[in-house]
Length: 206
Image (tube, rainbow, N blue to C red; front, side, top):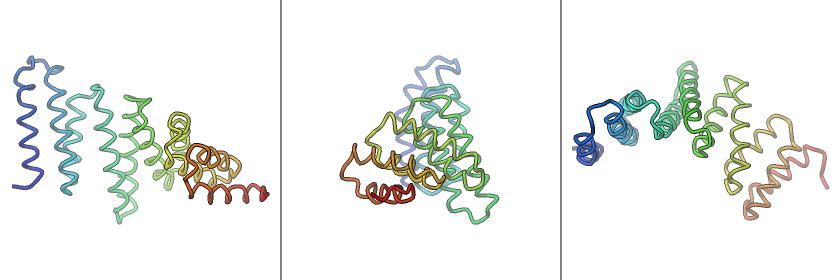
């Protein structure tokens, strides 16, 4: 038996009492069934069964579209689609995977607009989308600015946001981001190098 099959069997045993004891209404039964499909999708993704994982995520989303935890289903779904795009050899397939990832993460943000994990993923997915759709960069930047305000210890988001400003030829804004990161986390050596680069580009060598 494959590892994921054993794990799924265990998940079924855990979820069975909840499903059996629930009232027959769809509202009562769908969240446990959605939980099962979500767990199945994650296990299948780990096993490398990507089409089956995608199908499981889709099923979880259909079973409980307004369930609060569905934002995490959409998040995992979007990240899997974005990973698929990284390995796609066909540019059209890559763009299609990224477009779907953007749709999924946008829906996740609608359900959980203040969730930092969703905001980080929005930044990552839309930054990838910007390669084929320059307008997507504004969405990535906006999401990461929210993370910047709410999570001052998130070094990776700060670094990504600063690089976006550098790429947009806004070195002064980039310098602000890197300087803020250094103030928050002085041990971030990469931030010092990027701050110097931003200041040089902003004609502030001193």
